[in-house]
Image (tube, protein in one colour):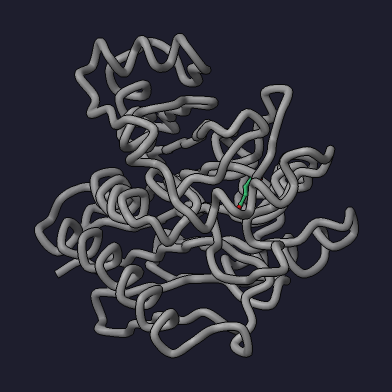
Length: 309
Ligand code: ASP
């Protein structure tokens, strides 16, 4: 059997053991396991990496613990605007959506953009119109409402501040979600989905839906999904940077991803992390924050589900 592997994340940030109860920790780990199982099962059945990353991210989007899909944070207008992107390392095909509301699974919409449209990136009302045409599942505002996130927003709603979900003082709920996978046939894929930042306005878009910044996949190098302060990931073109360091400098997956997260990103004051997989099934999950919800499983039986450093 050819080797295969998958890694997922549920956001990086100020995740401290001291602020976590054993019950909460178990809830997060269970949620990560459900998504990991879903993606791994797809790979085990011989299906594609793109199918596996979508399946894993759908599970994370449907879980209110994470800032994506159902658990998305509130914008300055008290709404939800979600971003997602997906990339296939086989042919560098990609799909992305930004500022979409009401769509249950933005990652599925991103995949439809990739596979059923002639475009890569759709935004706002147009993306929603496309979702309707594709018969995507929609949910009302109530479905996306979460009391904790609503409170997060009320705390800063009348100010000019925007807040990274994973940087709040009341450390309970974090982040953007993502998945990367290598399938049995040697194809790589990456997917990322997020609600962005609490109280965001002016149509703010982060790195998550931007190919090269928050998401990248290329069979020749690696598949990457990022989480953290999006503005810095855009400026550092972080996901593509990992791929470039491998392609043009000959670095290994570990060397390349550590270089971006521990050296290049901090140089411009960025914080966050990423998950990445290469064509050999190696996995790297570096982060320069206190924690990152993360997990991986490989066909050789190795597995990890962890939160802190
Ligand atoms: N990168 C995301 C953004 O800036 C946030 C996150 O990773 O939690 O929208």
